[in-house]
Length: 455
Image (cartoon, rainbow, N blue to C red; front, side, top):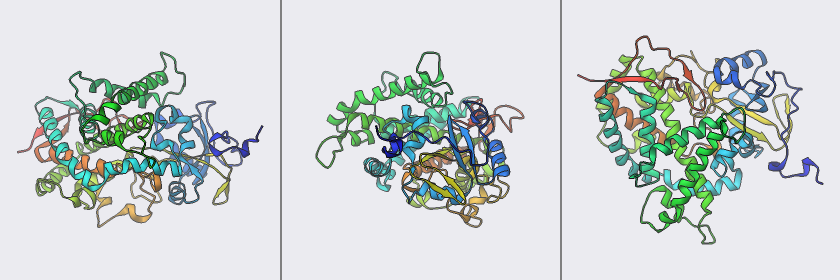
């Protein structure tokens, strides 16, 4: 029998011996996971102040090296050494939910599969999406405006799922399947956080897996129909794409990619949009400034607005995902032994980069717990002190493939909202509200707001 060290890296057990590092593990089994769910900023601040930029922690069922410095973040996410496996980082946490997706593929395999998806997010494709997105946004905002109040998170999730289907997967919803799909995505992400990982009825983990199985069946059942169709959506493109040997890609791979793509296309941006509305509702003056700004924009957003131009509204987006990043943690596992400063990290060791705290490191950010979009303006550019102090979309080969799509969704949605309406809390004395931090940040009550017509 081969010794563990002789096995391929993705077949070796994780190293859990980190006693040579400073830090603390917390409770048996759960470690510091519950503390992280309750107050991630407080938890990571404690580690940073007591142990510095490198320490040991136990979260998500793993004993990890916690990295709290932009230099370490850059090394891990860029991974020029090819030593920080994303596949093994997420294996114990997300494998059952994202198996086959880009976050479960390393190096050459990841490059090939990312290539399948790249065409969906090129500028030409993005321009074709804008008109369809705009129509859906206008229709949704008009519907919201005639209601006494709305739950902003729920309505944004509905809107962005509708957009994701329109852009990525055209389907006939005569059977009203979209609400069931939305519930499956919610169950899947909540189930991924289940502490007790049993695939048995009554457990959150089981409900999440049931959601994942439903979604995979949904896409698998459509593949042959999509291959025969003249549809031009992203799903149809995946189904018709062929390998270098002239064969279709495996149906399961296609379905896995679609589950991950549809999740990323709506759930993360739902969180960002909700938290932007949460902060904007607390600052009517800023809303008025933004309304004046978007009134000067052309009817059709040009290439520069979506991809390059810095403006006050995009600064709001950037500040929102600084304070509430769509991916709060980046997990990797070492393939070989390495060092961070004078700290030795053995092979097969989990490393954790908490973007949620990197974005609030007091040595790098001024007033890090204050919502201040101006910090992203061209005049200030606080985030440019280090290329890896602001990492809402990750970095390196695994940088978010849909980041420009998310930016476009945000600009189109809030241009429509703010040009015609003021967003107000529907409850008195609402701010600050209690927030849920995982899997995505949102107010616990889904942010009840009302839209008041601008004069």
